[in-house]
Image (cartoon, rainbow, N blue to C red):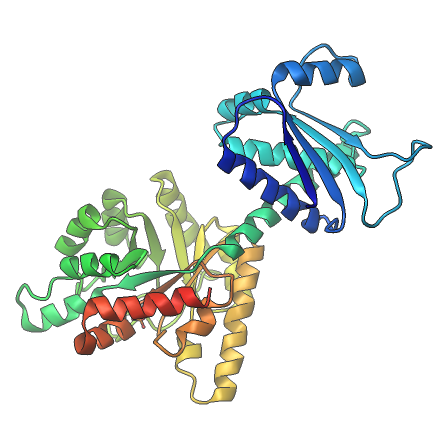
Length: 394
Ligand code: PXP
């Protein structure tokens, strides 16, 4: 085990301990210390106070202490397969600081662990303001990288777009089939989210559908929408679990391309700000284009949804490979820029598995292919089959 974890005081539950141990091992790898060992000791305040008194002559507890391993001559040992040293954390102080800062105990412990580890690797914020700034930057980088790596490992989820249930209803101008009922069946069959696009012309989903879905969806309601004043006000009142901003043209059959985030950055930044104030995370639907993705991160989007349409609609295998590579790279870029990554459009029972297997994407948003199959095999079966494709490859 690269991490020797000992718990000698202070309250912590078993799940938190496992998470901390896993994070410590991941951090060692991120610091290119995969072959090294780290001792991590968790104490209470009285235990920490004793150590602080003995080694730093300070008669009070502190949050974290780091003791680098030294050889007999007081020098760091040779690199490679070595014990880096000990990081000691007071759980009592960590818990107090977490409450003061309004963060979880996990977050606070992670910060303390990173801080201690960087001390073991030779950083010292007390040496000079310049070194303190370098260390703070490195801490931020490691926190970001840790988050990225943890997201990479999460299982991919399926969000089902039920717009086309409403398309069928609107074709007759009556009340069936009902997308609200369909959404419930999708959830029972394993969908982790429901997506609806409330279009300006209300061609399929109606206000009534979204209002009811807000009350009935148990997983997560993602409102896909254009950034127009009327729909923005609707979303702010509704408070869906998230919104996905898409470009919208009245005459298009379906959303045709990603947003021009770069060209509309001021307007989109304003919308993101108002959604963020209402605690609604925003996803921007973008083509797999590095420029758009970087701008999405710069203006504060939480997610991007990468447009998979050109990959799915490719005319031949060579084009499909090219488009797939663009999607894969875009997802990596987005993750590296600190964004959470979804993908969708045009995905079907053949094209989905590869995208799900990328390991960078949290959620796939799929509508037409599922509804087309549902007409033939039933909605529950169609959703279950897609869930198994999405999750088997994760
Ligand atoms: N994502 C976005 C942003 C969309 O506009 C759509 C279509 O409504 C989808 C995903 C789902 O696409 P499809 O119906 O082709 O699966």
